[in-house]
Amino acid sequence: MSSEQFLSIENRLFTTVMVLYLAAMVLYFVFFAIKNEKPGKVAGWIMAIGFVLHTAALITRGIGAGRLPLTNQYEFATSFAWGICLCYLVFLWKYKFQALGAFVTPVIFLLIGYAAMQSKEVRELMPALRSNWLGIHVSTAIISYGAFGVSFAVSLMFLLREKMKGHDFWEKHIPEAQKLDIISYRAVSLGFLFLTFVMISGAIWAERAWGSYWSWDPKETWSLITWIIYALYLHLRMSKGWKGKSAAMFAAIGFICVIFTYIGVNTLIPGIHSYA
Image (cartoon, rainbow, N blue to C red):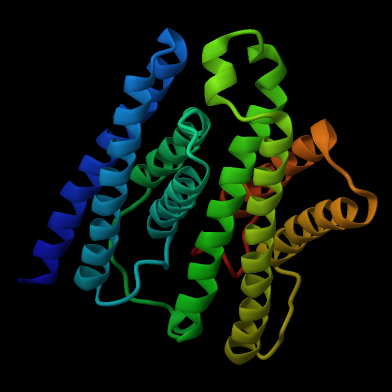
């Protein structure tokens, strides 16, 4: 098969995945609206199928492009959505509460919708991207952002939980505040670990590409700001026993910084990372 055929297949898979994620999001909203378990269970299976097809789309894109599909806005946006879906399915499997999907799927759908608006053209890699560090740096960013996305969703659940009390359905499907707090903390810890790898691998890569470990590029600066926010969250958590509403709000703000680091910086502030 030619590269054009692989890219055509990837385009069809991407469209299918987008429809599946939309269907799952709608079903999760129905699950919330009518307070019935069946739509939530179906949505969970649809998300799993969407994730498998999403993985196939990324692999097909990589084959068609002849490189890792992680080098432009479209590729990273769809990979970002894939990372959140992966982390969501892992946390869903571990903690088994479908209500999380109603908070995660809108984020996934917005990201994959953003990806759909970007150019899908395959271009030759610029010299700085022709490095083995590309896969390490960007893949760790995808896992990191995915974990932060789950933490954001769980934090929203925590903040809204009090308004959902008093109904047996919600008492059954939404964990206690303490458990939500722990899940958010674990998601932040996972994301922070991988974000640290992102910073280290990026510094090493920058030194080899441009001769400097750090250049205060806008994306580097905002990545550092994001890292500091989550580091402060973990520090306060471990040293002061910081929990509850304030911690949930802090985790939510951290993810807003993640989104700005990815979309806002690329859109509003030109720099050496403007291609990604």
